[in-house]
Length: 325
Image (cartoon, rainbow, N blue to C red; front, side, top):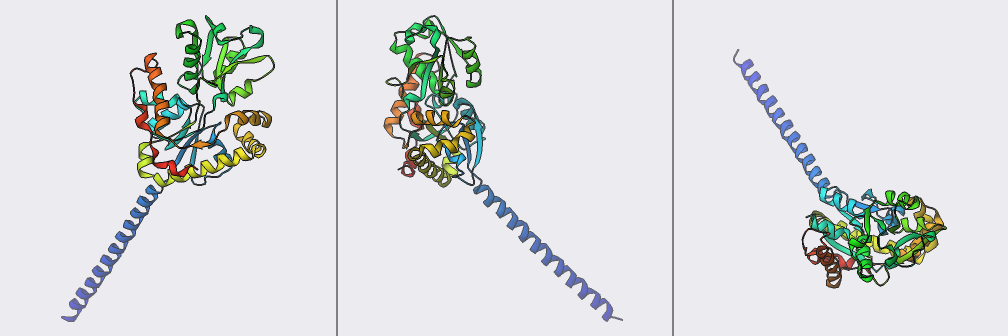
């Protein structure tokens, strides 16, 4: 009579022990899953913002940076807004967008640049207009994308011709808006960069001036502070691949145009013509580059194109310079 309860007690104890073991094992599995998620978070892909034209577009077209995610932007100002929103880690712009972004309190670091590209942006007018110099545009309407590289070119052109912003009517239009406005005669001149520049080089269109002797028109690679801090190896790896791919493209212009034309969605001959003047090697950022950007920022502040002076040279981060040959 007394043995049966003992057996039941022993059986109950065994069941409890078995259940405990199962729960402990399950906890271990869940902990392991948590660890995998943390590791996955640390290894999250680098989120890259690019424009259809620029060194990053070639990297994407050649699939030379597997594992990154890509986001396309029409212009530099749109890309810097994505940095502000935290939706990309790194991206490329011209020389003016970083100034306007810094003035807008957007946080970023400047981690790479390019050689000068003055022939890659220009003032376009109609041949029939009779305009021979930029000074002839006094009292006329000029279109450009606000906050883009061409904004600084406008400032330098006005300065070089003893003019001010009051001497012209500026119409701020994105590239997709600027071309039809120019073609239809709604504006007298259009200041634009490649490849939109090359696409607009049609019979009857005249290049009034480019940035030669006025603006460097460099490309700049901007990175979010979180990416610089938490993904430095991924940033360095991307820059290394970007540098190699850019050099390959310069050495192989025909193949570069063939690869890029579908990505840019423009004819191969237009792609080749624009790249011949606009694709330049990458370069490390230096204190001199910081001073060059600071001069642009100071110029914009003086003209009240940005609300107050900014210290853009403090945004230069040289830690990735070794990734560029």
